[in-house]
Length: 230
Ligand SMILES: *Cc1c(COP(=O)(O)O)cnc(C)c1O
Image (tube, rainbow, N blue to C red):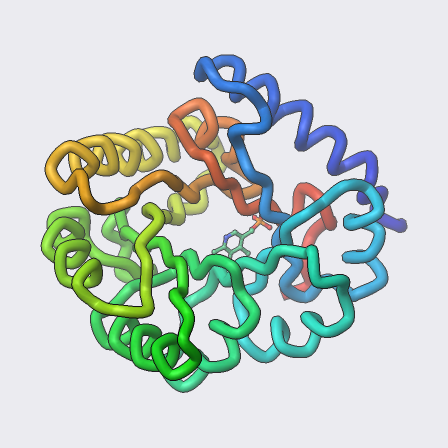
């Protein structure tokens, strides 16, 4: 059966608006990144026509292949683990890298950005749940890391990102989101010079809970585009 992207999108936006209201915010304060990994270009065009403004990709090659097929006003977000040898491909295209997860990657982004005379906005990925399978810094490592990355040219921290464990009941993900929010609040007080305006958290299964806990960027794929085949 063909997926009704427009109807799915409408439902997601309604649920985001309700969750934003529950957390005392306006719907416009939450940015929706439509995660388009493995989504065909024709379907992405439907999403654009339905009002999507930002796409999220997790592979550098897929981003590079799709990027020239869309108008320049489309925003591209890089949300996957980024290998240092792919940094060049990504920094030319992504407006925000959500997944800064190592010092080595920070150095490479800084170096490549300086070569191009640009500053690349990034979020620091935090592994709140501590699952071994997940990338990201431990919560206790984030402060020192932010101080060090902030001293690098060509890279600009804009916030934090996390991925919650895949659970049946999204309520089980709530403590993870709450902890990232609290960590951000603490670090904003302790490091006022570091910009931590964005909290990227929440996916198809748990975005309403994430918004209730303060997410202002959500990364939603299958709730818009239907189940993926991988
Ligand atoms: C795939 C992916 C998403 C979207 O997942 P859905 O469950 O399809 O919404 C969000 N964030 C990251 C980092 C992803 O890799």
